[in-house]
Image (cartoon, rainbow, N blue to C red; front, side):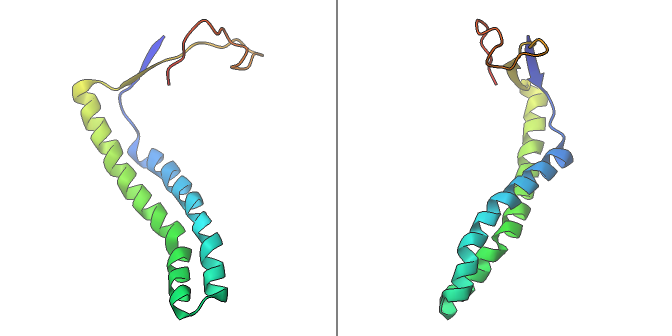
Amino acid sequence: MKKQIIRISILQSSKIVTILYFLLGLIYLLIGVPMIIFGNDQLRIMGIIYCAMPILMAVIGFICFVICAAVYNLLAQWLGGMEFEVIDIPEGKNTAEADTNQEVLI
């Protein structure tokens, strides 16, 4: 059975992407905190910038995804949305046990 994504909810999807970018930005904290604690003046400044990265990444990720989702929605109106195929999986079976003769495209 073919399905098509014809519209992406911009605000709701952007909230999810913002949280994901924030979580990815937390990796910078692992680098920034030691730079602040053990570094000289130049490294401390870089450490402060690294510690601000989760918020910067979240804001930039939100803005970029809003733009990309709006462009997708516009293009999907003209060209049609992304297509993918799905299968129904019976209750109690996981995806590995599902009918493997059908190809699933996501």
